Image (cartoon, rainbow, N blue to C red; front, side):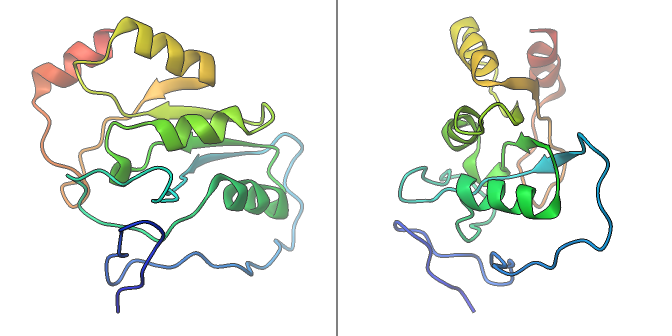
Length: 152
């Protein structure tokens, strides 16, 4: 059953909802532990989902992500651009900027990205670019485009 999210977006049927009451781990993570792959989703009213997306998740904000990080005992996050946002990295950048220095990011860019845009992403805390090959999440990207982005 689809569940409305904020904005004009309806969650894709079958995708999990945000779970508000995760259990606390029975063990303590080592000091400085990093959650090395997590996402922010929207909120769609503020950071719209990409028209070309393959799915629409429920909203999961930066505040929810940071609360989960702290609850689980991680010191830091690596926030990876969610495919449902395409190459619009505003939700990712917003999370990084508001992370109190506890997060770095992995962005999604197109070959048209400018050097100034790459520098702005770096300044916000982005340290990598995501190449996704999962067909259920993204359309095919030509190898020459991937190689051009990687070279930059």
